[in-house]
Length: 80
Image (cartoon, rainbow, N blue to C red; front, side):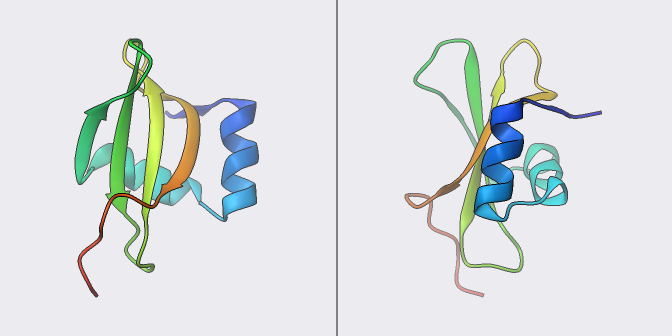
């Protein structure tokens, strides 16, 4: 079960990112990378029905807790 911080819920609503998209990103990321903060990790995935990627930031020790979610403009999705 995935838990979301209030901040993550707010950002998802603002950015039209669904729980299903977050779940897909965590289950099958295109890339995993370190975050700027040492206790966090980033999952990145292209959104299947859009030409953008999302970044999901979680705690390393609690990977089912989503801290924030945002579009990632640097990650290039392949053309659809």
